[in-house]
Image 1 (tube, one colour):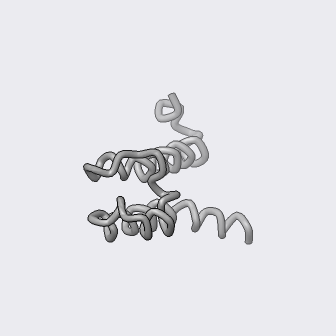
Image 2 (cartoon, rainbow, N blue to C red):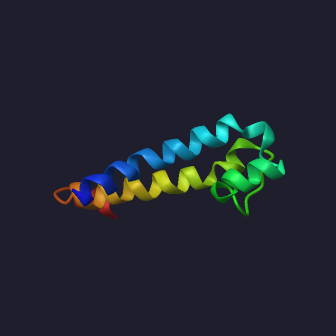
Image 3 (cartoon, rainbow, N blue to C red):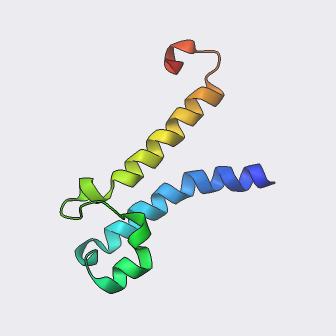
Length: 80
């Protein structure tokens, strides 16, 4: 049961981060937004979407490498 929850969270969380940042992209430098969702882009520049979406790319990359290592054991070419 816990594994199902964590698997679901690993898939949903990058989408949550992306859509939350996209919805608030014009107001990321406001103090009220920074207090509420600043942990999603802390330490990153907020001028361009690529900059504040770095954490989304990082999470997706980690998720995909986990999927490759776990489910493609029969295909060692993808594990290098």
